[in-house]
Length: 431
Ligand SMILES: Cc1cc2nc3c(=O)[nH]c(=O)nc-3n(C[C@H](O)[C@H](O)[C@H](O)COP(=O)(O)OP(=O)(O)OC[C@H]3O[C@@H](n4cnc5c(N)ncnc54)[C@H](O)[C@@H]3O)c2cc1C
Image 1 (cartoon, rainbow, N blue to C red):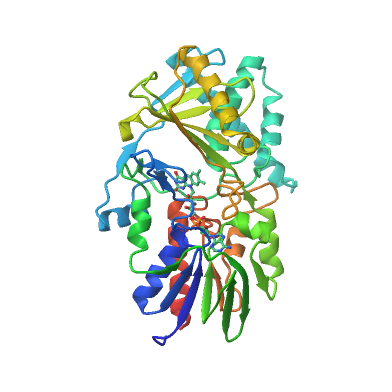
Image 2: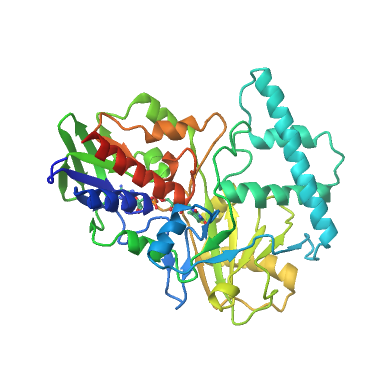
């Protein structure tokens, strides 16, 4: 490698920043081109209420051996552990479920998944084509004797434990592959002073050009040309870290066109939707120590959980989560209508006297042109090899990083971080 070897990194999310900082430490000349007026991408801490509010990633999933924790230690960033099992669950009428009923519901959920696994094994033996996880669940549950309320309860568990995690309806997840991938052990944690501290630390001393949305990437044997609205940048290599949703939309063009296998992988993989409705109230009216408030709705997937951020922020803040098609529907609603829908659920649980929030903040990750969704998932007919296809370099000039290139840890901050380091090492090993 010569000192003048230049690398352009497209995107200043954690993957792009990790790649850039590692390459810079190796001695490369690195320029990061970012479309937004801020760094961090899907790590976005809003501080306008005087306390950190996470609009994108919140948790470090599995703290043992997690590279995010290594960085937290290196930069002396405070983390705290969380426990989603600290859950208060309410039925459709707003009545709290007894502990025994909660345990029974969870057991039923795991039993249903065990039966789905048996069905999938049988389908695999008979070489049957992929179907959605929802279709598989429907096949299994059609043999159970379930009342409408039993089914609502199971649907709640499916929404909360699967659809919120994968940011997709179970009707869109592959029954063969939906839960492939690995996890780090240990508890989950978060940064009480903001996830953006991690981003700021990794971005230190980098040459980052904000408000430089990349329109086109040309690559040939001798190097790359990256075109923004007003500027063109040339370099020896480029690492593209734009989200899968942006690749799907074709808002960055590649010349020559990307190989067929990569284009097919982009098409097959799913880009999910997960959104937050952050509500700040004049006072608390919910259980002070609960971490999660669960609700079994009449309609599948609507307002199934609110997270209590009082213990972290010492402010009366609740964060409602919605995923998949319902989250997408809400993106077209006005803020007032979304808040009213959230309040209807909260008033069903806590009574008509619950006050209106004084402040709200609503994410719309699907409509965001620089993300076009929340994170990737294994859609029906996709396999985890598609993540590898997305990660595959093209012509030893063009490299790809980002959560959707991480076969092991897709859809996470640590997956994105590791993918950035992976591509920096790949370029370094070429030189
Ligand atoms: C609501 C939500 C909750 C989440 N919760 C968690 C969680 O609790 N824990 C967890 O581990 N993960 C979570 N995730 C996932 C995690 O945030 C992502 O996997 C990770 O941050 C992705 O990093 P990245 O660098 O791959 O992509 P990004 O952070 O999206 O970075 C890509 C960058 O490219 C930029 N870009 C896009 N197009 C262009 C263009 N044309 N030109 C230039 N720049 C461009 C974008 O603006 C962005 O800055 C969550 C995500 C969301 C949306």
